[in-house]
Amino acid sequence: MRAAVIDGKGIAANIRAAVADEAAALAEQGWQPRLVSISVGDTAAAELYVRNQSRSAEAAGVQFEARSYAETISMEQLVGVLQGLNADPRVNGIIIQRPLPAHIPVKALQKAVHPLKDVEGMHPASIGNIVYNDLALGPCTAVAAVEILKTLPLRLEGLDVAVIGHSEIVGKPIAFLLMGLGATVTVCHHMTRSVAMHSRAADAVFVAVGRAGLVTGDMIRPGAALIDIGINRVDTDDGGVRTVGDADFASCAEVAGWITPVPGGVGPVTVATLMKNAVLATRMQMDHYRDMYARTDI
Image (cartoon, rainbow, N blue to C red; front, side, top):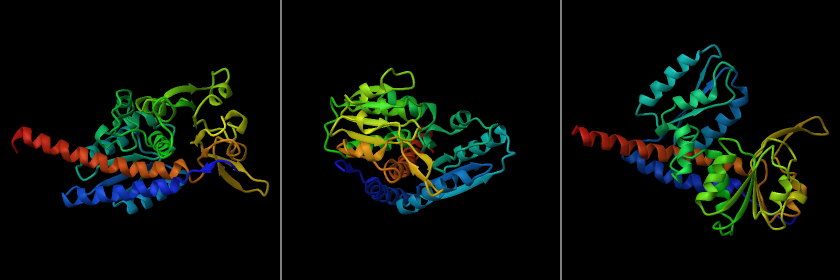
């Protein structure tokens, strides 16, 4: 294989080490970073994510509490829970695990999280701030994918990038983040006439669609970087299941200069970015309360 396989776990470990130092410094000032995870209903689908987040939090010096609520909880009750967490200065970040029951609209729930505690970066205010190049608490997956690109020996100013997928929390934020770094970005979606035409012209390709094998080697410029954000479960010949990305790894690795594996690529960096957002949120809240008390002379 020609491509260098990007070590997402190594990048994540470096981020966690820096986060641990920052978390320890905040704890010394009386602001121990603390996350609360919210799961609703059948939590089996989210258990792996919760475990990974808990382990990453422990390694980063961030306290982590997982809370589960019955599927019968109403939207009003859940919003009340979030309002209580928003008002609690001991809680610095709130994570809403998915999937959620049908009667709980995820977007409405994300809006109920205070922007200063939106460590997932999914509040409309957090995503909107990216347009103004304010990257305080960006969407974790999008930020992680761009951070991976920044570790490569590529000059981002003027870099031609194709983003395949235009979701509100991954594709679009990636495009804005890259534009803020000076890249020239083309966003492809289901109505794009020829995705391959754009991807073959790009120095770097990001793909986040949710279709296994969507991107193949003949769609990649030789030597380009391929950041695969997709997570798909596919059946194996022996009756098992394996996790793959949106790119056909074998054919793309023959052409690309760098490629992220799935698993082990963007995923670990996303969880580490969540911890980074936790300490950023904690510092922002500490500064907020100090400014508020200073204004009221308390």
